[in-house]
Length: 332
Ligand code: UDP
Figure 1 (cartoon, rainbow, N blue to C red):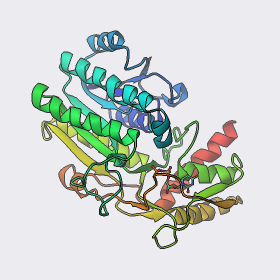
Figure 2: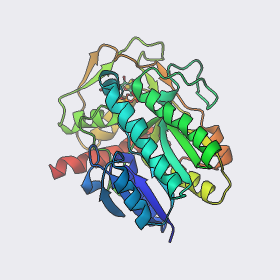
Figure 3: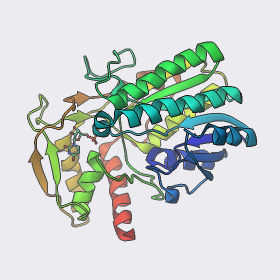
Figure 4: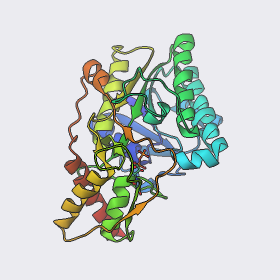
């Protein structure tokens, strides 16, 4: 059985990845410091609690296993926090990741799928954004991810480390079987917040800005289901294992369809309305650093890895997230 290490596998996207890999027959080890992840989300695979800063622990882990590949989700990802605490972001997202890369090279584990982000692009110069778009991040979070992308290019050339950096747009949705879902503390993302406003965990949802140059004045984003994100990781890993992909590659991951904040709220209202819930909506000022429109061109991964999103419609995404929200509320 092929062994995979999933770093950050106790988090939102990582836990879905671990389930998918385990169901596909991989022997999965999760390495997570549980700073933002949850033990309860590791329902598949073995959990090793540890920090990427702890190089001796990483070396012990690699010496005891026969990993063929690594998928790395471990990072801090709050844009606002990255502006006020850049040291935290550069230390964890860059310096600690460097430890992981070095131990991989040391133990000759030469395949890495790395979670990158649309935040590496900065303000869009054109849309939809393809991989050729300039990368000029406007916050330390995006900068920290871009730094690792650069490291990966150099590690490919010098040490032969193969990698695929996947630049996510807006990850959302939940495991269709409802074993897993989004659970951030604090929660900052639109869809879970809208649904918390429906379930009563929040009193209302604030729309950040209604004066953007879009059809209804609210920001446009590209929402991609977590299952589709995970299937892309698995395809990327398989392509490296079969040597179809070598060197340092990068792909966008989005649906290519943008939805405004108002559209997300409207669809959510319809979905929760069927269960008798309502959503109280308020207007607020623009949130600093939000571009009007972020939409991905994901043709490259569709063409090269034959990736196809299965849950691309916004109704399914929000329905799955709503089922998960109801489950969370029932558990509280
Ligand atoms: N947003 C909002 N109210 C909220 C949270 C988010 O209006 O309480 C908007 C935000 O301004 C952005 C979109 O929803 O235009 C998606 O934001 P999110 O934080 O989910 O993801 P981001 O695009 O920032 O990665």
